Image (cartoon, rainbow, N blue to C red; front, side, top):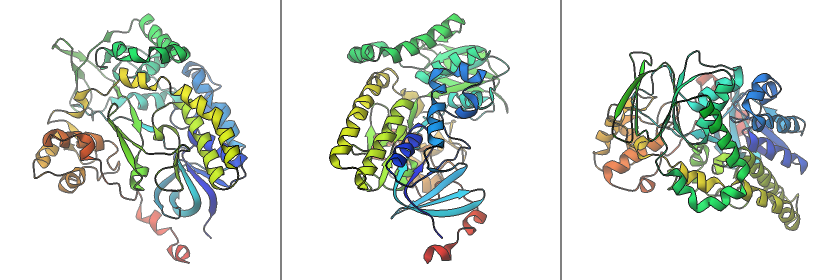
Amino acid sequence: MKREFDVVVIGAGPAGMSAAIGLRAQGLSVLVVDEQPAPGGQIWRAVEAVAATPTGRLLGEEYRAGAGLAERFRTCGAFYEPDTQVWQIEPDWHVYMTRQGRAEVVRADRVVLALGAQERPAPFPGWTLPGVLTVGAAQILLKTSRQVPAGPVWVAGSGPLPLLYMAQLLRAGGQIAGWLDTSPPGGWRRALPWAGAALAAWGDVRKGLAWLREIRAAGVKRVCGVTALRALGDGQLREIEYGTADGATVRAPASVLLSHEGVVPSIHMTRALECAHSWNAQQACLAPDLDAWGQTSRAGIYVAGDGAGIGGAQAACVRGELAAVGIALQAGKLTAQAAAATAAPLRAKLAGLLRLRPMLDAMYPPRAGIFAPPDDTIVCRCEELTAGDIRRAAAIGQPGPNQIKSYTRAGMGPCQGRQCGYTIAHIVAAEQKRPVAEVGFYRIRPPLKPLTLGELASLDIEEEKA
């Protein structure tokens, strides 16, 4: 028989755990499904096993704070199913998922998408070579198994995450060959309008400055104003080549290169559900349109955490709590007056946690070069298509991303455009001299994750029809 719940929460990171705890406190039945083997999401990955270890100490107090939330989540009474992939959601809400090789559909009155963010895809020549990873991937290896590269690593990118990872890597005994800072020049000047916000949230600013001090104290070479990047090697990374602000080109030996150009909300599921989205021009990404409780334009579908807009772990927790209050209100578990009273301090806390976000967005805008890679750069890893392939296809009439997909198969691989969607949209916009917001994004179709025929066959279709 099909299982039914008041709410299905997809994702067990900060937002998903917080939403589940809040929903259970209101007496709602909750199923939490997550692709990971344990709660924590990306930012608190493996926190239950790692927080009390030496690795947990070097990762910092903010990481260890996730252990307390994970403990509360484990005891809140929600059904929790890790190692589970959701591959389709249908109206009324039917959630299709696969776990341990078997598919199942469950029904829910409401669904909370707590899917977090992903690193912004930033293709450059050679980025598919072995030895080239993202900073986020390297940090996952550090969190889950304390894997530290044997030799010095190059870090190339922009934003707070490279600073945090470099500080953590140095604490773990790692070595850094150099830091290629790709942040556009004038960041502090762009941040000046938010000087008051910086003072009000000085604790967060101080953390970033502390990471910088650790990096400088270790003697890490920093190259500012890097404008271009290339990874070189035959079957393995051997060298890096980068352009500097003065127009020079520099080569250096390298065995590991870690890149990062910011994070963007994970929107594949909200796009598949045809929820309304708006274009964030400053960060060049889409985010779902939400009401005050985190509900999308599709009644019954909520988004919490960084999938609603980048804010970090603490803001994700508050957004999860607000979604729980909104659902309790809609389900008749809270009166409008009680919901408003409960939400008021949460909204004030969220506003404080997001106070620095405009400043960070101004300091670390995505640099133009990542959206205009050279013709020989692979932009769709799944189908091994280059930027030149996409530019040639974009010259045939005036196709949009979905027509490009039909012409070239870009976006049809296992990642379904997660790694190439924004790059394709920007290339098409540039070739057609149109705003990228007008060009749009891929239309996302199920299954949302790879699904085998065996898994699909395990779904009892006759039972579902009954």
